[in-house]
Image: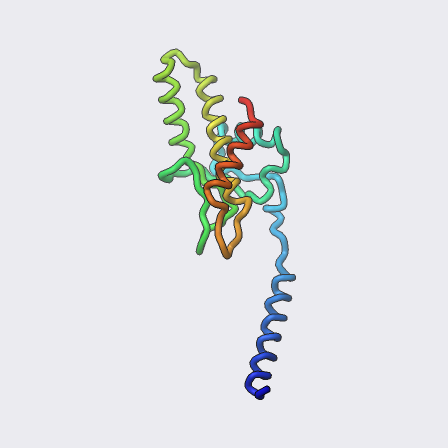
Length: 163
């Protein structure tokens, strides 16, 4: 074997050792190990949805850092990439509230606010579980679980949840 080959092999093995030792030094994130989840900003209907999910599975939110209510085109999303935290579920709570309320009032103009709120909480449970389905299989090198996995997570949750 040539000297250059042996040197290259030596450097490769040293680099592999360094990378391996760095992987061993990765400390678990205590927030992601905890079943607690932050809700930002505080929103009573999200809090109710989280409480309902925790009744079914107290550890459901392990791996989720927070649920953030904000504006986006869909009902919810998770994000990855530079300056993004893939452990955050983003919800468009205002859109969920508006659409559920409008549909229920069109179907029954005398529907109570309590019934509307129950339906909104149910919709939030479904969106949260869908987004959690994406997070469940997240890997930095390949991204989030595909839609089929997220839809299955939501289907399983809604099969167990009864408002």
